[in-house]
Length: 121
Image (cartoon, rainbow, N blue to C red; front, top):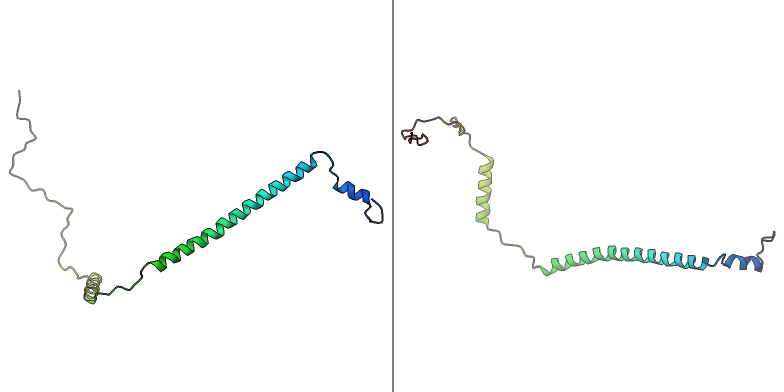
């Protein structure tokens, strides 16, 4: 290379000249790999962006196609439900002692015991 930083024709030819017979194939391979990576990125972006757009559009279509309306409220049933909720919140006090349902008194029975073996030899 000249010392005055001017490129002569030989240095340009040397720069673009392949160093060996596989340099062209290496560059073609890198180009193909770059195109494959770029296409994978574009496909992933396409799927990412348009899948969410499709889902939101489908959600809007379902919401618009359904017949949304306000149902009539039965005021009598509403009053009964509010009264029952109020009764459930304001429980009455139990004044007498509550029986323990897990305590059983054994009561003798008058029936014969059928578990004994009566056929003795």
